[in-house]
Length: 230
Image (cartoon, rainbow, N blue to C red):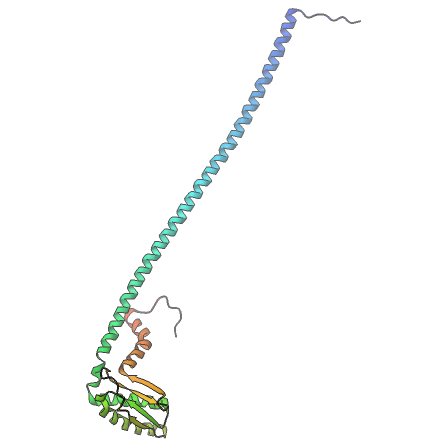
């Protein structure tokens, strides 16, 4: 039977010191592991926070840059539109002035009796060809009645020569054109139901509509924004 020997005080002290040293070493290593893990988690969290803040700053900058760009585009567009409208307005004023000046000179066309009679004849023939009736009526200013009668005789002869048909022109003296009219005539057909306005004012209006693109091009050059042409 084995015998258990009691430890001496020195042996007990040594064992205690060994156990204390072991426990201390374990604690140091555990503390080091905790510190390393804590540092790693801190670095990860720090990187995450830095990345989030950086993304937030980038997003805020991108938003402000986009807003600034849109504001700049709107400003440029507004200025461009105002400039364009100003230019168009100035051009329209010039065009209106040109046709206003032309309107003021319409009356001068009736000052030369011979030329004016030829003009009346041409206007009358135009209406006669358009109506193609055996009789038409003509309305004119009171001051032009005699000139219209002469023009009517010449127009009747030329119409018959060109078409082989006769057409009688009657001057309607009871319904003259207003004296404020610059000149020209109204041709009436279809038993009074059809009127062709061949006054100088109407011809100028039609010319203004049809010739406006040509006049605009001659004054201001071709429109760079126009893609289609007749």
